[in-house]
Image 1 (tube, rainbow, N blue to C red):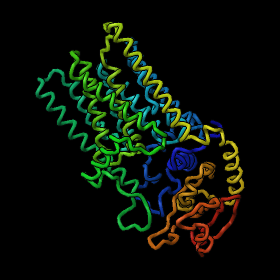
Image 2 (cartoon, rainbow, N blue to C red; image 1 turned 60 degrees about the horizontal axis):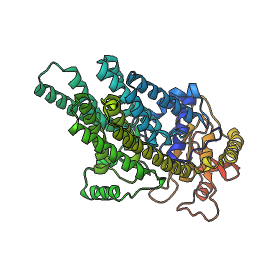
Image 3 (spheres, helix red, strand yellow; image 1 turned 90 degrees about the horizontal axis):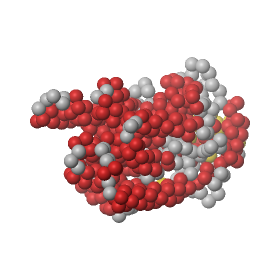
Image 4 (cartoon, one colour; image 1 turned 120 degrees about the vertical axis):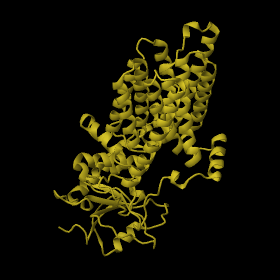
Length: 494
């Protein structure tokens, strides 16, 4: 891990740089948007909002911020949340064993641990949420309820898809806190509170995302678009998504693991439904019902409003699957001592089969997605990146009190996809540059730009090297290997 380099997605490079810049410049860092499409919010990390940066930035003093630091931060969150769940289930070894088997049978708990992607945070948040919910229900703890609401609120700020789970938490809270009420009034009050607070939270979460992610209307150039949910419901999209789900049409980002995940989520949903219908134990039925609600709502959102492709939906639904499964297993009265020996043997065989299949699919996905790291090919690439930016660093002029634009470096998608970029000086943020509507280099207000020489045989729709070289507004100041640094001739001249 000493030479780990981002490979999961271009977002991983951006997340790493955002935390690195935040450590150096705090809330007064440069911009990380597209073509200077700056949102109205004074919080300007990037289109994903400040949540991820603040979470990992808070852990950075403990783990530092170098190649392997995201891995340490993710491990810290995962272990802490898992220990909280084990504590919540203390005295109930059957539930602890069942929860451990559930984790071992689902590779998404581990698949993002090495990376700087925010997914590991969401998985750990789901584990912690299940633990707090268990403590709140069993011990009627106000502290646990408060912690659960705070955790879900923070997770919603990091990714607004968590707003889908808020109605379930609110409904559970009202039901538990109003036990002395008559059943009809209790259910109606819980449902009304869940709908009202859930709707309000969803609106606030989306509004916040738009506020700190999208530029005001009328801004020109490339940029990020509205969340697809804002497009409304589409029958054509629904049919396409259902077809992709049924026929396992997925992107091979993690090889065939997303297909296994769909099957695992389906099995979980069936088990929860059967348990809710057949069990006579009220506590078990309640846990199953909440698990169904969490999983069904979270699956329905990408199917109805987003896209099912084994990548986007997988990232959104995996935390919900973890939450639903662990909520149920932490609360259910499993009564393993009452099972027949034949039932126990069948259950053990099924679990071992799922764990084995999960291991095979997870290994295949990890090898494909972390190819260079898996094959230990990153050390020379990492050393090369350190050498390049060590040579370029003297040309990056930084002054205390510089504006955010003067702490901004531009790069196109090829630059963003280069994992060596994690060695960019920490005082500077990276913004993406795209051709404008006239297919020209856009007018931007930042200070520096990086251009990467394309490999032989690789075609590009737009020649950024030629565009920067021939522009009067930019001049070449340095070049090392395939990376060239340009400086603006019109901006940040002091």
